[in-house]
Amino acid sequence: MSWVDKKDDHPSWLSEYCSYLSDHCPDLLDITVLKKWIMANTIEANIPIGYGLGSSGALTAAIYDIAKTSEGKGDMSNLSELQHKLGLMESFFHGKSSGFDPLISYLRSPILRKDDELHVLDAKAVKLPLHCYLLDSGAARSGKDMIAKFLENYETNKIQIDQLSTLNSKVIDMLISTSSLSDFYINIKTISALQHKAMPYMIIDDLKHYWQEGLKSDDYYLKICGAGGGGYYLVFSMKELSTIGSYKLQKVVN
Image (tube, rainbow, N blue to C red; front, side, top):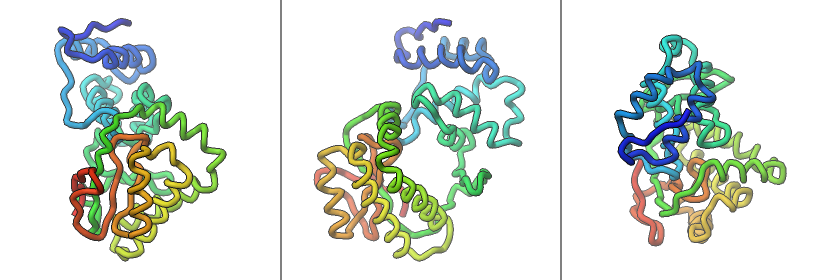
């Protein structure tokens, strides 16, 4: 099926995405509804594309909400199945998607995956009084390309990546509990150091100096956001910050 952009308002990738959905997800969506909606509407969002903040997940969730079939209306009773469906839809952007980002966007709530079960959390689930920021690298990137690069390098850095997975789970538990703030930052520093060592291709060259400087000074710790390679990066600090070098910071959590 081919799609015609609405008065040149739609980017070409949106038409390609709709064609993908028509070919790969005909049982999940009412394609007739989707086609009518696309022809009559344009997409607007405040999430920058290619920056690691879940723009593809938000778009996937929005389209699913608009055009899901009648069978999909009972999906809330089976979050794992809903995640699978949304992952199939979002795979257009990443090559393969877990469906986690669009599930969060669709439910508009944080989701905790623990022991292969999904738990919907309160919107204010973070309990630790930490300082968290977004650093805008000023460089958009392709999530699909970075994920492919990660998979290519996985076996070479398997030990460090497995460590990262364990540590990520640990700091997530700390975020939603009353754990020690100093213990949290110790683990974040370890994550930052491991990412710098095992995933240098996900850190833009201009940022590598500041990454090492944070590890050395303990004033802040940088962490890859999304697929890395550009876009936004996360910054964790025990104090108020406004910039790192020439990079401005946007506060996320107090």
